Length: 443
Figure 1 (cartoon, rainbow, N blue to C red):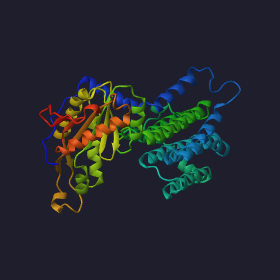
Figure 2: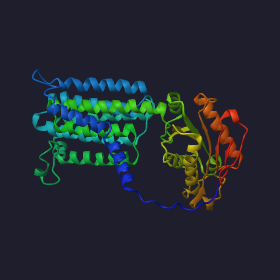
Figure 3: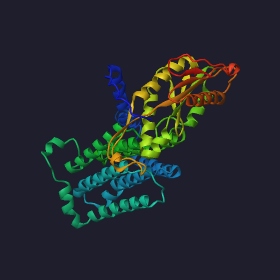
């Protein structure tokens, strides 16, 4: 592990820009945006799919869906979604029943606006917190915070709440610019700030729960905007469905995706291999000297290095799919490619990693480093070793191929690391010949 030169910069092509734009669109719009669009379209053109002449049938959808979501989030241990659904259920019940029952008509709109603002603030707070146990002190504090807000809103229904209601309903700019919304300008400002912050975080790093919270905010905004109509309950129901889907997606990802690198995990690899055809190849990629980096600079810097390598591996040509196999090892699975065809593809990635410096920012390090060194940025050259094997008549299952690739990886490390080794069919094992300028041999 040594110093290395900086990368040569590449200019994005039109296709890469298009793919990046589609990725951003996906992060923002799927599945929450799609569900919200479908709900709005069905209410507008569905000829009473959700509600009709008999009455406000939509008022029963929201409590039912939100209650089911609360139970599901508890069973799957998704605390943030549980808290969001609890507040969503409380908010929907207050707007649909409590406020109309106990507040005079002239102050109902202002109380709705206060509830809407608090709802946006709560979802924004949840987007910055992590999941914890349902019995943890953090969860208990948040539940107490929700209860406190309910009490505060109840107090605002009294006579001394008139002044607060008047302030909440005041205009910041010309009122006629906001005739499209029933909410006061202060509430619109709170919603806008929450939406912008959550959208920026979602674009920077997609997570299913953050996506669910963002689109629950959007759906609830439409519910507040249309309060007093059947559409309000449908929009709250849509917010609940979005959050429930985020719970299911998160649970799936916990089973089949590596949380640290966001790559498919070992379980996902085994399922992929099990469903594969009769001809494929596997490359096992080991990170050289990652333990030394962690010992010197800590777990956080080691994780950043692993993420950098994972990102480079995902750019492999030829349709290779990347998996996190173990703490310091990845697997690249090629469908319908021989080991010989996979060699140049993976060796190109090896060279890219070799030329890519990893920078440890000043201030990171362990006691093994001197104080002056910890204060400086350090550039490290991280390398990878690769072992490749293919399925053949003597390796009929994925386990045999993985073992063969693992032996080839061990040989690459024995040759001095930072090299690619291809495993020959087991029936001719033992034959060996170098056929590349960089140590690249047949096992």
